Length: 461
Ligand code: ADP
Ligand code: MG
Image (tube, rainbow, N blue to C red):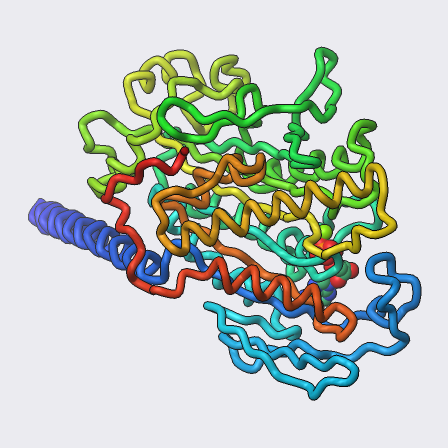
């Protein structure tokens, strides 16, 4: 009996110390989160990284589609990563003495750096995402500079799907999705859900790549972007599919990518003539009394409460997914109805090729395409420039692209621009243009960014 008593006392002690440790752990976790967010904040809300891809066989091959007039039969590397913050470009023009130009970014990747290394710098942003900040990661660069490789991974031939076979080659989108679901798995089940949407912006029009017709067949439907009364950008009727894990998510992205080339009205031969935007929306249930274990941080709760919506995703309304760990039964849904919903968004963007295709000789559809791309990319440059300079008016509405991205590039959102550079001499003009874009977008005054608790006004104008 006394044995039992001793054990009981021991068990009680253990339980108590476990509780203490748990409490301390929770406190440390909160501290870590606060530190993490101030670190990310100190770095500014816009950061620009630059990736120089290796020289590739097609750099020398004759007849590469773009820039044929400047085609040379050998390749010469002119863009280098001098260190992990500096790009060096050797500019030599016939009849001129060669000059070296350098550009500084938050991070520069040499051609040898792996997808793993690139993602390691992206991952901290996802921690911010789970803390309630909107995040946008976009790849900028000319066609062939490695945007799709960086965002998705190597493509499977011409069908624009990406390969999942070699994990080490996976790009930012699949890795980020996996990481988001990993981070979410630490939250109480049923307290969140994840939706995906895939859109393409082509000739300043938005196409919903996950929309289905009455028979369930997928086809690209035109959508529009509006500004809500709360000053948020929104795409009415856009298809949001609820997903339970990273592979469901990637399956839908692949479906969207395949449609991108098949849809009859999207008559562009090459994917790089349009912008691709994959959005992951996390809806979290926030209890009204602020006692939810997931959102102890008052600021996070406030931040999240800014955007409250009353719609449940389709799957939940139908309560079809019976095996779901989320609140999917009608009773559960009713119980959670009193909770507030907070949405945060991760937007992953593969921009259209930024090459300055000579306008001479280009006519008809191709000319129209080119001028739309030029206009949307310069609207993007204007928006990023305005944010970097902390101007009170940011011209989001000058193009559908910037209007669509408004909530994940402006305000307290975190933006990462990944400049992609082809190192070969024949792409010098395009590389210089991309480096100029990145330099303009960079927030140089580190630590001087608006703090998130300042009201962010007039950004929707
Ligand atoms: P973009 O999307 O900018 O037009 P891609 O991502 O399609 O360019 O890249 C063009 C080619 O270069 C592809 O064959 C791709 O696999 C390859 N490539 C791009 N970046 C890298 C890299 N860092 N390492 C190896 N191959 C790369
Ligand atoms: Mg591409």
